[in-house]
Length: 116
Image (cartoon, rainbow, N blue to C red):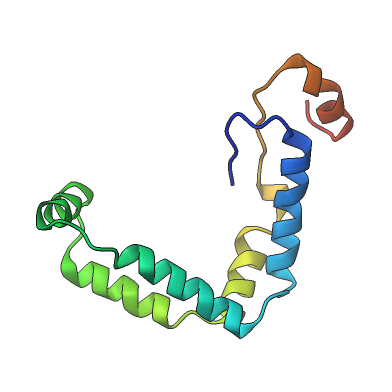
């Protein structure tokens, strides 16, 4: 997760921690997952000019088969999958790092929170 020109760094860090807790705790419904998938596909399937499609495939090294495989994988995502991935990749803070670049005024609160 990242933030840019954030005037409320500590509140943002708290929101990120809350988001991890939300995901790991499975505090969402199957309908929420369905709605998220609809939003994802509306972005993926947004109309593009043929030249943009070809350029994207070429510059990123994707094939049509790769894109279809990703679609199939996304269609199979369940709430249990999301909780498992959040637990495996987001919950273990000991393996993650946070870096804050900002003004001196925020330093004291960050030091109080354990930043060096």
